Image 1 (cartoon, rainbow, N blue to C red):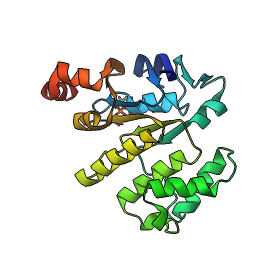
Image 2 (image 1 turned 30 degrees about the horizontal axis):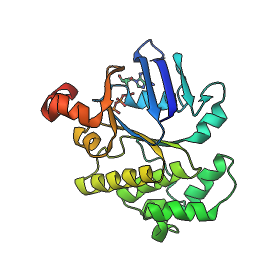
Image 3 (image 1 turned 180 degrees about the vertical axis):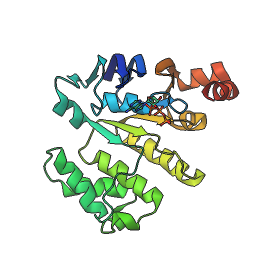
Length: 235
Ligand code: ATP
């Protein structure tokens, strides 16, 4: 397998000197699902924001499909899709316009057939003319995913996609992630939930206090640590 994402010695020091990432290195293979597990404040969002070029790294490097995130930001950014933790959607815009407009922002040519495909894949096609503000929380999360996929990224980051959602919606999200993997997208998601990593990831990384403590194949990790012990580590 080929590494689609290479992260080397990534350090992020915020203004004031707090070091949120203390030299994180990892490679992600094309087509895999990596779950990054960690408690509040571990550095998960910082890692995603830095890798996506939204936050500038203090040092270290990120290469996306061979494109350095600093030297070749536009190319790297086009390969990445980001589903943020917060629902940052325009409430009066329709679902279809939201996703179509997002594609345009990446300078991609209009492709109504592709937009229809992702809206159908996310069970949003029937809601395409609905204003965002009329949708349920679960549907809004689907729109966030559709928006992130609008420019056909190869790598999708999902920052705590199931934080604060009920069990049913969490399982829906797991199905969506599995479906996206089947369509060839590489996925990196962050989570607090060991059962989520167990349900959907190929590999699991544990991050705490800005350090990647371990990264392993899911099955090996589960066997070695056992669910109970890992839960304790994460508290
Ligand atoms: P959560 O699960 O609660 O979302 P997280 O693992 O995503 O947490 P981050 O949001 O990356 O953690 O935060 C890591 C650390 O960096 C925390 O201690 C946080 O307070 C700090 N931090 C985040 N953003 C900033 C900022 N802009 N300035 C200073 N410190 C920050």
